[in-house]
Amino acid sequence: MKHTFFILTALIMTATPKAHAQQPDFLKVKATEQQLDDVMEIIDTTVLKVKLQEVESDFRQDSSFLNKLRLGIIYHETALNLSFLEKTAFKGYAKKSYDLLTQLADSPATPTEAQPFITSYRASALSLVGAETRKLGLVGDAFLLFEKAVEKHAAASYLPEFLRGSVAENLPWFFFAKRKLAKKDFQSIIGKQEKNPDYAGWKVMSFTYWAWAKRHQGRKYRERALQYLDRAIALDPNYQAGRERAEKLKADF
Image 1 (tube, helix red, strand yellow):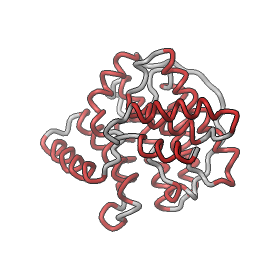
Image 2: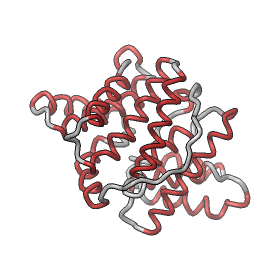
Image 3: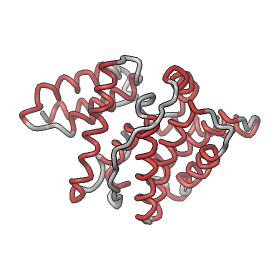
Image 4: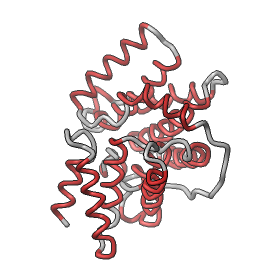
């Protein structure tokens, strides 16, 4: 949800055909998520810089699979939140994230339950590489990776649709046909959450409810959009997820 417009104004999505594949075990995926939660969706840049140093230090002391995955994710968060604002200090972190996650994705030793995180963040990191380098071909490649991640892992993890939707919603207006994918992805997450309250955590759902309302500002959806904005606010009492954005959007309503 933290993908900003100026980061992705050059991004172009590719078409995504429907497909189905075997899903990883939900409970194992959730257990892995608990080990990664503190390095995911960090919007406070001060906290992010501290966490980056912490995760890098942990990896230097112990280059285990888990620490390598955490490093790949924190590099993604750094690229997303810092590299486009502080280009000199943090330039290239998207590529660092993509390279680390590619190593894990290609390793036969990687456990199945970790793949939703690896494939989703790898795709998002590649889209950031494309934005940073202005190589639009990489962006097309990123959405091919997103499609595979959604196909294989969306039933067990919110992450493929959440990250893909976050990128898609911030495409420039003239890619309106492509931006529709954001509606699809966030609605899909909400639908799965209604069936299984454990599907996604409070941070993700706060962002997701805000994103849904942002994409449904017409009179037809006004009542539901306001309900979702209230949920986004209630889930985030300490302003660590979508509350600030939700409050601003609600005021505009």
